[in-house]
Length: 447
Image 1 (spheres, rainbow, N blue to C red):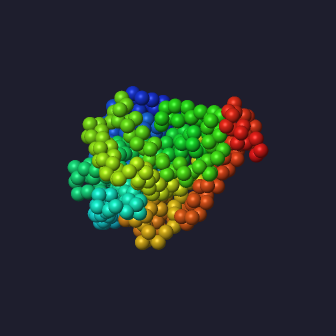
Image 2: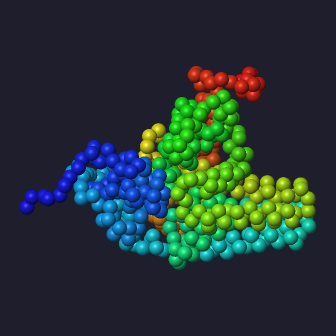
């Protein structure tokens, strides 16, 4: 019998990649997601930037098997007549299927429970140190404990944004707002919006917000061309002031990381007060505002201004460890200047990520980020399963001649600083100069 299906080509599919006209292909079937973009739980960025192409690997990575049943209502009646999947993609999808059959996506262990208990202990000890101790050292330690609380809270917020860490969606939402908005002052809505974009466009200089830290940092001299950020919808200008900061970024990296949380505070308010579509906006704002009530009140309980500043600096500095960890997994990895694509999903995730070797008893410290390659390939996988699937990912990379980069925590820091230093030296020696200010001239006159 003759095939009654209607077909279009990949070139025709590419024409449907603009707001109001967003088509995608999943396993060769074409879906119209133009109206779904506003309701998409993962935000509009993934659909806007992957539209007009086959997105099977990305869909498989981010959606459980139950999501397939909802696709039919978006089906356009067309199929791709030139649809094909690479051998890497076939093996990747096979792994996802195998892990699903093994129940790994559902076996979350007791990581969330243990982390919540640890957070409760850290919070109690920090508050006790402030309210019940007079010692300067006790107050300093209390600030450090608060920083440790924020780190562990960040891991829960990260996990709950990728998969359900609690027994129900309602409890999961409660955990998100509590650990993110209320305890750390960072909007979980902002985190999901930002982090989903990072996963979709891993290490794209124009589309990955986790690499867009101008004017403070640039991981590549390509930023010197004043690239456009399609996430923030603005140009990242490489002017004289930026050049000055970038030229010394390998020295300023760790000090800036101690205060990187301030940027997260600001970004949270910018999103929540914007005209963007933010789910549960009032709830998000209430959670963030509650942080700015209890934290200043707690700090005010310290006996003098000096100890208050010390407490804040201690909590921020300790939390800076986590901000450094966020950078180690990607700053020294392969980058590119282009929009994300759907047909090289596995390759882009492995090339753009770096694993950090550590013993299992140190997993609590890294929060799952030590298996960054595995996490990017299987973002829904509970962190307690990442070590288990690591050998499978190594074998797949080996079979297809793809890199599987894994180094020690110390080496990852060395690689990150080396990357920043290389870009810093290029900024100093750039043959096409930008107007220099007096500060630049004073610092660099003698090399």
